[in-house]
Amino acid sequence: MTDTPLFDTATEEQASLYVLDLLSPEDRQHFESRLAQDAALREFVRELQGNLDAEVFAEPAPAAPLTVWGKISARTRPDHAAVLAFPRPVVVWSRRILAAAACVALGIGLHMWWSVPPASAVANETELGTNPATKIPTAITRAATPGPTLTNRATVPGTAGEVATTPNLTPPDAPARELEKIHLEQRVRILTAQVARMNEVLTQQLAAPSGVTRLHFFQFGPGGSNTLNTTADPERGRKLVETLARLAADQMAAANPPPPGTSGTGSETTSPNPEKPAEPSTTQVAVLSVVPATPTATADEAATLATTASVPTNAVIGFLNADSGEGAFVADSYSDGLHQAQLWQATGDGKIFSLGVVPTSASPLSVINFQTLSLNGTGTLFMTIEPQGGSFQPTGPVAGSIGSNNLPHP
Amino acid sequence: MPEPDPPIPFPGTGPAAVPVVDGNDTAMDARLLAELAAGHSGALAELYRRRAGALLRFLERMLGDRRESEEALQDTFVQLWRKAGRYDAAKSGPLTWMILVARGLALDRLRQRARREAGLEHMQARGLSDSCTDENAFTQLAAGENAQRVGQALGALPSEQRAALELAFYRGFTQEEIARATGAPLGTIKARIRRGMLALRQRLKERHD
Image (tube, rainbow over all chains, first blue to last red; front, side, top):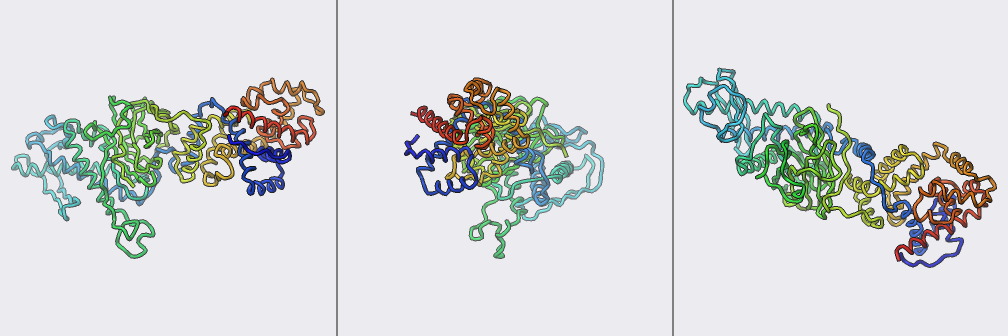
């Protein structure tokens, strides 16, 4: 502590009373005007204040109560309830999410069509399951009975307006090519139903951060309907994810109107800065996984970048505004009653912060909001499986992470 | 719509990732307040982790009730969140400012509960008469449960100085109220406060030397 010059008794007394807030309003005002002009006196007052600081914050300090923090969080983030919570309605984004979801669903459909097994393998009446040969979910019709005409007029981005249409269903003894068409048609129908279901969830109450999204997570639902198992072919899974990321990003960019104030010049650009060209809709793809089964990764891997090569069964679709740190993701409501997924952020200087637990929900899909610290181009987002209610620090295995290499740099 | 989940946990410490909180590391607190002013809720969580325990202890000393202290702690951090933009480093250190916020909220509660009267009654119950010339009374105050609640530095002060500072800092008594409570003249109270604050200052200097 610096040596400060001594003051007269009256000044020392005034300073002591000032620090303890014992001066009358007039005396206080007079003393503060004197403080403004006397640096040495300000230093002296700082020292006296430091006395009380040390008194209050003397070590060892007790642990901060968790329950109080929860209430603080609820009061400071009322729009989110908890940092991770069921979202509030933002109608505008619902259209964008729908567009992205439709794109994702079509991408899944195309992929499944690419990996269609021989016609004989799908001629039987079976449930939606996994083709043992490829371990990729296959959409299989219950019965090859004639049904209504199914017309699919979906446009796949990048295919210059091609329209896929499907013919009427034909009996199973039709030529193989026709069977392939039937198979595709049936798969599209199933995917359409899945998209409709996803839409139903996503149109309820959505909230997503504004701004350009350049980091994409992708989700492939809870175990069951649209699970994508990539363990057998991780490279294929990675390519698929990247493809879907580009598709969704293109769709998002097309659906993303110019920010307010940027179109005042009448320009068609969607860039926040009319003088700068619009940025590519996406340049990076990453996958954050949520593992429902017993994971084997350790918490020490939190700082390392997990690749899609090790994606078990699920991934997370999300958005992150690297500038504001706001993010949202569509997540599987993973919970086995004993554990919950918890999202963390590790900053570039090695500190780890909890961004909250993924709430359990009756809905198979939830849009989760979170707020990261300022990333400044570095940092890692990762998820661990923790005891129900979350933990003060990562204790469970890492279910997935996105490292700084995958985050956009300023 | 499903109910939001229970409160989230506040930030924890990663494996050897977060340094031990240094009571003198006010630079970090200042940085967190700046981030708070910029709207980063993560900074509030980190600030809570670092300082909430000590602030709760301080509030308990003021309010004497755990539940009410937790409510005041909650109010404190909500105020920090809302008013972080008003913090002026030129006027006070970050810890001082946080104490000011917490203390102000606690004093509001004390006024509402008319704790000053209870405090006077408490002191009178401990054998302090209105004239209060008995040194033993101050000795009782120093040796009683209050001594265990104050910090090490304050607890080491002479009893009359400690009593004056405690009543001012933890109870929000005015100079006149302290004089009335202790039975000492107003001028004496001012002198005791001055000597007590200088003694604390000296102890801190010796600790850092």
